[in-house]
Image (cartoon, rainbow, N blue to C red; front, side):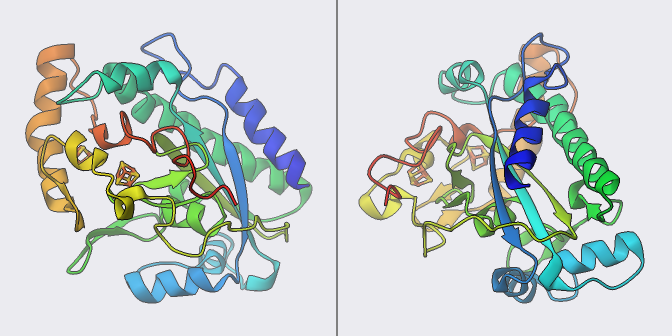
Length: 280
Ligand code: SF4
Ligand code: SF4
């Protein structure tokens, strides 16, 4: 079953559904897939750590979607990484204030494809007779304010990818995955027990080279939102509001949803786990 799911995700992203729409290019290249169990203690840890009244466990997502209880022991979470294409990353590396239109289109229309992939997987499991839910497509997905973390969501794709063996966090808060940090993530929860992916790490930031003196993402950030102490979400959000939207309008004539993410390209963890790390 695990191989069939991987093939489903890879083939979906090989299809013409994987498109930037307004630019005739695919949004993402070949995905990586990981699996974790609903009763993994890290899900409970995140719930307690983020906000027990807000963050939902995999079983709670299924319960809300289907209106009856589920046992954590039967549940799996399928997590995937969608890497930006080499073309998009190359173009972004040359930018210093705002990523190119390809990056923006992948964020908007690539993300639409990401959600459609999650819905297609839900349908795949439903047809097989299993319940499945994609939190990012659910009307129960929400963001909240947090005194400790500034902004939090009730399901985190990056934390799910971490639990599912796909990578560890970097200084800038991005997840350094097996396909690097210039990626998007997705996941679904299913009432079917899959074999979990081994986590080849024990520390939350094992793949980040900041402890060895890497400062590349600090230098890439035009908003001074990354320091050796980590990522300042407030400064980052402010830069998005005050600069990114304006540059997209002035430079590209684009007024839709826009994002930064310069710290994800032109860095040693852009497209892979930095060399010599995590290769055990
Ligand atoms: S650029 Fe360097 S310091 Fe920043 S997340 Fe990547 S490895 Fe860590
Ligand atoms: S997204 Fe942009 S503003 Fe935010 S931390 Fe990364 S480089 Fe800085």
